[in-house]
Length: 300
Image (cartoon, rainbow, N blue to C red):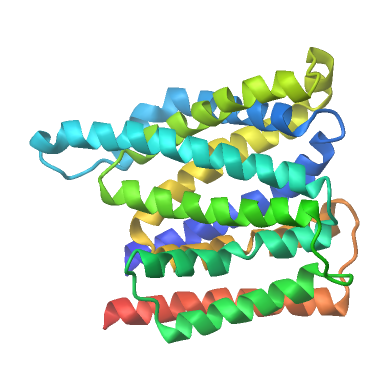
């Protein structure tokens, strides 16, 4: 119970960081391209973890026997590489898609990962309570109220963002899989950032024209996204998912879009209509309900 509650609070913090990072990310894209931005933030995320890896690894240490240590190391390296590939694909699709569609539609389409994760769970033979499915449906309705501001149509950018939602779902399930194998969460997170950064390099030079001056202009937004959104938030996500069901974890992390809207209101002076405020309330209620259901199930 205590571990589950702590995990929920940590994932809530993750959603807050990701949501507020939306402002920094939007500003950063005024100076650099998608692959340059993602590459810089990924390398920075990995670098800031290096000095604290021993401490983080000790904090999340496995109770597995020494005989299992080789398999744990294999799971850590393999998991880090797999998560890095998936994270690179998801981040790239999101950045490219957002540039081709409206923010409202992009936010709603990305939020569809809260539906995709439990569907993927079915294929992995995970039992999802009917009440949780109702919470997922309520959250989707809330996201619609919050994000969609115009007639919904499907364009190239919409399809790219939909692909991003699917790949982010795979990322959540991949973390869950390697956590179950006893991977070192901190090291796996560090490996995933360097993997995503390396994969961004060739595309950055092929499709964009990165320069030190443009990176310097975007330095503050890259620092925020690299240190907090990547280094801190993604690592906390991996730690927290050790004690959280993927579907419930996804619902909590989906509050990212609510925090993004609130951050835009507080920092950029964007206004929220009554419909959008209602959407925030519906999503928040759905997440709280799902967490209470999960806690009751564990008590039973």
